[in-house]
Structures are given as structure tokens and as C-alpha cells.
Length: 490
Image 1 (spheres, rainbow, N blue to C red):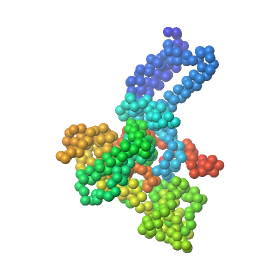
Image 2 (image 1 turned 90 degrees about the vertical axis):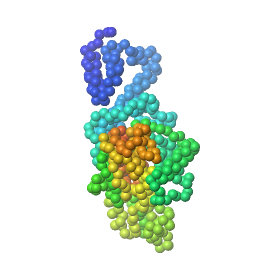
Image 3 (image 1 turned 60 degrees about the vertical axis):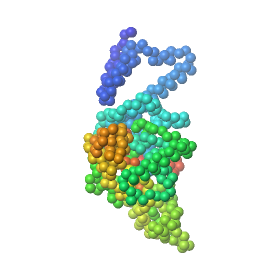
Image 4 (image 1 turned 120 degrees about the horizontal axis):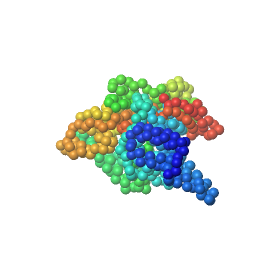
């Protein structure tokens, strides 16, 4: 071994100390196997790491220099994305007007503590699918158990949080924006045209109806890959990234009454830019694009209602001079936007809240509750270490956390509930859970649709909007929202 210089020893010492600090932080002594390679890179130099630099062919040197730079960049991005921050784009309007479609965010992994990846062998910058190749961006083996590195804090109420979609464990690839369980249940319902009167059934009978619908829909999806695509199962860290606001913490009892969230019986302060959907009927003319821009309503949210029978039934029967029913829009409005339209008597004749027939299925699908988007619960949010009594009325609510998120075998038999082969009427939770909702309350597929977010699904906290693009405008007509650049996420 040739003698190393003082500078080499100093570099080796600095890198080694930093690497040791990293291993202590992540609590992974398996990483010690890398130390001999660090020693060789700086001191012994037995491995020809830069063999390509001595190649006589300049083309080989040029190509290898690019490969070397790309590999280094990919490794750096891999560790930065896992342990420090990640870029994220807002794909839907569920958090408008707090966050807008087209906002690009820096998401801090340090805020809640970065997770050690479940699937460590993966391609950086690809969540679950490689572009162009359309194949998995990760290798399923090995899969590591959930572990979170110490961070700067914990999830707090009203935090905006990025997390892996809990119901995204199973996916029909042609319907990736719809959770598989709701899709199967809905498709199964369509196979049975005569609706069942759930009010007349016992809990066991209601559960049997759910199983009938779900199993029929699942079989339909599996037997029609051309329509629904393949069915794939994804580990936690490879599920779709969602972003919502945390309104319920572990141990809270949450209830929604007339669109107002209550925590432990007390009303929760609503986000300043919270939106609800309203049916807005004009006095005759259409709302202009200029007015939509002033209000901040995107083209995707400008929905015209064409069902005249429904509108008349809802009391929206204003007609113009020719006797035609005036245009009626279904629009998401903040309080400020609502007041602006309601005060414009020359343009607007009626505004009513969107009826619940426009909403979808509520969580849990296999519990008949009559809950809807505006009136939901009460529901207790599981807390790590807390024990709950299991009954016919609450088992469907906590069945998925017990079975899918915490890995237990749960069976319901005639003589009671069995967990991992043992009869019981209680369960102690192993993780904390959160209740996530969008600020655009009627246009958000959130916890009301798919339930709790387990702590092992929490990704990080958005800190700043570094870029914001309006897809409704051109580059020369305000596409870049300059007023949102480098705006802190509240």
C-alpha cells in the first residue's frame, strides 16, 4: 500500500466522521460494510475506481465521464430524496385555494423524520413506474420493515402533509386515480340493478351485501384486463403521493356537521381559503371567462348542469325571456367568491349548496351509516398503544387498519371476532393514525372516502412553492404565477 498524503487522511477522516454520524442518525450499523470502500477510495486505492481516465481512446474517456457523472448524480438524488427533501407537483384541486393545480413544492423529509425505504432498490425520481418503459421502477426484494429516522417534529393539526395513498396498496392500472376497493364495490353494485333496502337488514346481512358487491366487482375487474388493466400490489413507499391537510390527530374524535369539522365536540377553525361546491344559476347570460379568471375558477371547475328535471326539482327554475332555463353552474367557491356572486343580482338568480347526490361512497364501504360529505361521524382516530372494544358497529371502521396496515389475520365467524386465530373483542393499535382532508371540501377524495392515514404512510411536509404554472393560460398570458413563486406553504 502506497503512503497516503496528509490531505488524503484529512479527507478520509472528515468523510468517515460524517458517514458515522449518518449511520447513528438512521440507526443502521449494516452500513459499516461500506467503510472499507471509503478507506480504499481515499487511502489504499487498491480498486481502480477511475480506470477509464487512463484509456487511450478519447471517446471511451468521454462516454465514461458522462456515465460517472450520471451515476454520481443518481446516487446523490436518491439519498437527497429519501432523507432530506423531494420535489412534488400538485396534480388536483383538492387543496385549492391553499395550493393550486400546477404548484411545484419542496417537500421536507426532515420535518417529520425521513423513512428508511421499504424498497431500497429503486430508480430515483420515479415513484412506481419507469416512464417510456412502463415497468416497475423498483425491485420488490429486499423489502425492509417500517422505520422512521428522528426528525424535527411530528404531524400537527392543520399541517399540510404529503403521504402515500393508503388505499393504493392494490391498483387497477387503467384506473389508478380510483382506489381499487371503491372501484370493485361500485362495479359490483352495477351488476345488481335492484337496490337493496339496507335499513331492513342486520349488520351481518349488510356485511354480506357488501361482500357480494365487492367480490362480484373484483372478479369483473380481474376478468377484464383490457378494460381495467392489470391488478398490481404496491408496497407502502411505492404508492401514489397525496397531499391533504391534517384535521384529526391520533386519539381525536372527529365529527362533521353541516360541513363544519368538530374535534372532541369543539368546532375546528376552517382554512381561510376553504371551498364548498354550489349550484349557481344565472339570470340568463353565461358567466364570462373574464369573470371566472377574476374569481380564480379554473376551466376544469367550470361545470354546466344540463339536467333540467333535476334543476327544477331543486328549485333552480329561473327562465330567460324566451322561456329557456337559465344556465346553471356547479362551482367550488370560497366564502369570498360566494359573497361576490351572491351580491351580483344582475347576473345571479340563485345559489344553493351542491346536494349530496353528487357525492360518492363514504368510508367504510361495508358499514351502513348514512354519512355523507357534510355530515360524517363521529369517528375515533386510532392512537398507538390505545385499546378499543370491537363491535359489529365499529369493526368495519377499524378492520382495514387492523388487517391491512398492521398485518393481522382478522376473521369474523358466527361466534365472534378472531385476530391471528384467537377469539377477542378488543384490539391495541401499533401505530398512530391521522385524518386528512382537502380544503376544497366537496372536490376532495380524502379520509371521508378511504379512511385513516397510518404513520408509516407519512412522507413529509411541503415547505415552499418554487414554481407555479397555470395550465389554462399560455406562456405569454400569465402561465407563470409570479406571485406564488417562493411562497411558504401554511
